[in-house]
Image 1: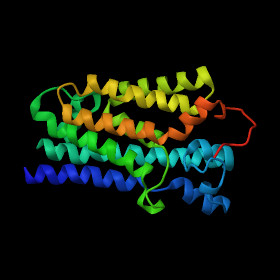
Image 2: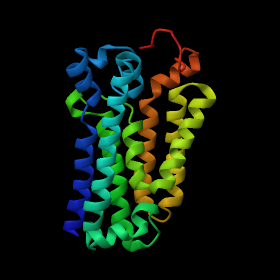
Image 3: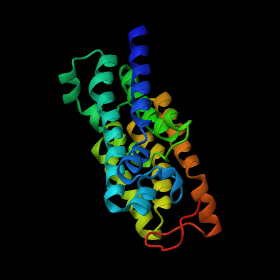
Length: 236
């Protein structure tokens, strides 16, 4: 049991540290000689990077933020989860339950917890980066990438479709992001049915991601949120 707990803690901590890397700040300072926190909306994520650093800068921030989410999910699925399940890595990798959803089999609860903790870790690390005095981004890109392993390809594609539908319907990136966060725990009811502790972790993480969009929600209500293609000054 102590070994299982150790791996579960490691899954969260490693993912948190990966998620906490503030690529938006690093890229803006090294490549553009500016601090993304002082530009546009002040957010360190892809949307503000695209608006203030241009397409190349925005693409770089997205790729690296997405990459740290992928790495968090991969480590959870192929390093920590097999360890807590007590099976060899190659057997676990061949088991569809790791990539297509976790069943309600009680023996898989540690695996479900490991995946959920990795998801929480990378998202919370991005939102509350210790390198930025526990400030950060909004967690969408990094969380979505991790979901490729937590929910599998099908769940990931559903999340992408929800995000895209929200953006296309409204031309607000924030609407797509919030919609994807709302759907996340609903999908978790399917993929993690019976693993309620893991599902609560996913739910709590999704709520934090929505909370991170509180300024966007306020601007949406006030009608001052910038749409895609808008030439207005980005709201602070």
